[in-house]
Image (cartoon, helix red, strand yellow):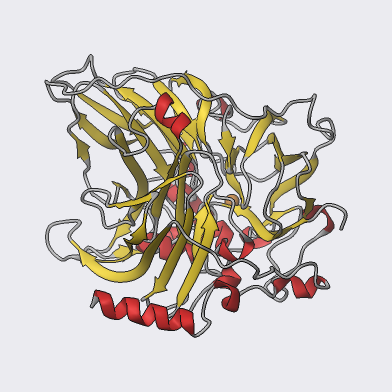
Length: 526
Ligand SMILES: [Cu+2]
């Protein structure tokens, strides 16, 4: 079975159904900016296969649940390990040493189009996994890129046109942990995962037969009534009384979490989307929107034999002036489909996420080391347009159409780019997200990690004080939470990869409802 599949993939590749053949002509619509030169043959350090498959798993007693899953295998080479998340039907953890040249054979064994997007990584345009790069059932897309990003908790998920949200609900998501020697010094075990506990938070609705129900709410997106951790219901951990690195991904479609410990101990935050912070910081709670990651250094050494619970505390999620809980399904009368069998667990409701039953004996005592300095810290002194950032305003139009600068994704011209969506490689630029809509949005930009310069509330929605001490803005980010009324100023510099990429809201229903746009990174002087 395995060897047959490899044979078929090799055949597909030999037939020219590779990354370059499937995609690579999108520039032509812009007057032929640049067609990627196929100069040097790519010599990978390692080759991995990731296959999207359908299978059944036991989540609850009774009927097994039909899921879609990424199955990963290391085919050859070094610099990468492929580790299963214990007990999870979700994708594997690819643990990759920074600098590794990677070939990924992505196989679609589902009955519909899909594509894999490496979230947070800077990769060549043809490896970005955009909707136009989707492949049909039975096809293989080959990704070839060098991992140039710093150590960090990246991940991968589908990105096909208008089908991302439901494919993620079915189970397509995996982790892509990049490590480097500096990170191993700061956080022992980074290279092997010895102290890592990945926690992928996803809320789901089930029908009476234990099958996923996909019933999104027009305003808020898809909200489940149970929160699974790594695909498991009623999850618990039994760690030793010592420190661990909890690597938390909000892999939910739409739900925001306000993470805190039940015993009131603060969270020690060591990393965000793009890796380690300049220094650990403490928070009584951390706000985490879909697509965002946070690394927490959790020291259970004083809790031997005790139980503590990782919770999402109650908060006011915004909305149309409905206050705490936002009404039924987090959407109330604005909920549209949400009224018809949607979630009874509102966005902003209190949830127990993970029970932690601490053991009595520790066999290790890992401690944090010195954190690596950032190569650059953006501020008023090195961001030329610091005082006049390029604005991107988020609004809600008629019938819950979510817009960015008044625009939506142009389905009739999937290569459309507006003037303010064109960037120059290596240029340092400030942008500003302005949330003029009633609910928060996590704004994600492909092909870059950025820094938050400033976060200011221009007008304050009710309940802002219930969330505004939980933002983690000191590190590198690829997805940033923008609360209603906020202006969040960020700085970025695209490079080395040029070409067409995307930016969008990471509430997956908003993305699928076209709160998404192209951006173009140009060579300087063009
Ligand atoms: Cu949104």
